[in-house]
Image (cartoon, rainbow, N blue to C red):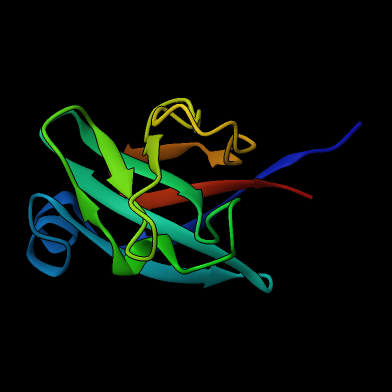
Length: 112
């Protein structure tokens, strides 16, 4: 059975909010896995960085008011909480990764 391992991204919530302002995304690479880390009105979310349509980096996209990341190439939309493609184009869902804020930092979880 795979074990969930946590990787520290920021030292605190304040650092996370400073480096990742509201309605923005950044690309984070952990163990050769590219992750789109996004900050929306609903919180922080981590999904695979590659759009399942043509592999464009979702961290280059934008976030809308429905908690979706929008691919910069063809405007495909993906729910940040579930990874589901919501624009009705039939693309595969994105892989999601858990995020956690603890006393000692802000973490993304990966199964090893």
